[in-house]
Image (cartoon, rainbow, N blue to C red; front, side, top):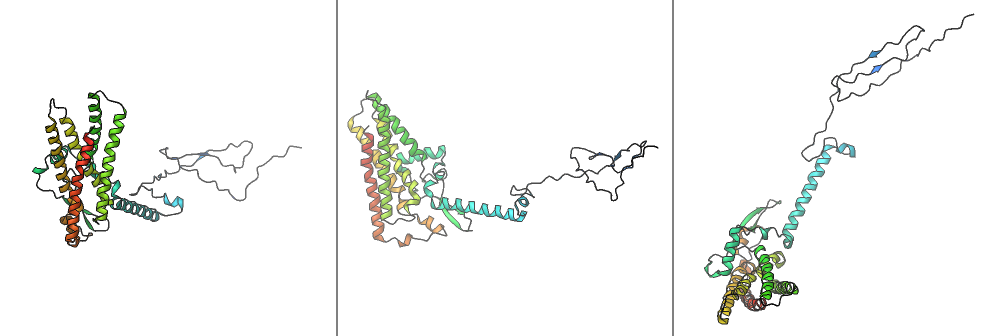
Length: 335
């Protein structure tokens, strides 16, 4: 009796085998080698290879849109492209509004305007400080700035565009030069000590602080508009210009055999020059320029609201500020 022949079971329903994904790097697509497991294998029958050619699938590469988002990025977080673009626009508007608020209400920190100088400006400004008698026009220039609320506002031009505009470059360099010259003067008299640098810096900062507080409080009590807090940097700049005359006075003492009378005449000249410079320059702060007030659409014209009595008090305040320069400069030249 022979051994019975074993046969593979025949499936009733054919099984579905999913197609493998296409390979992007293959030029002809992915060609797998597949064999059917459901063929009837006889003892003398061999499986036949079958190949399936699949057309190349175009690979999808997301392209960035105008806001830097990919087209399908938002969908991964549960939002569509329109929602992502709206969020980007809303964020950009919020950042722009914040920057405008800082520039408009926190002018104390907007120092870029006061350091926007050129070589020509520095030369003409030093000439203006030393020889203010030769200068004619002291009015500051204005330009119009378009705001986000579709309104035009008039602002002062940068120092490089207007020699009458205050800057921080010259006062800062003058203070540093004053400290170095004070140390040099002490060294020439054989009494130099490292603490001289600290004492000179402390004296310079103390004078600027006292002068700043005097002008700031005076503008506040006289109800100067705009508020002094928005022009605090201008007040600091005007307080630092006196160091130009102080430096030149100290340098004049190095002239061999200079008479004491000539030295004091040089000191009084720079004192009067600095006083006249402040009288004409601070006028734009204490007595606002009518051209600027009338050019601004958002600022009311307050030039007609200044009573004659208030105007006289403001002019008296300017004269007192100019007279105080004598005490400040006399204290600084005694190094």
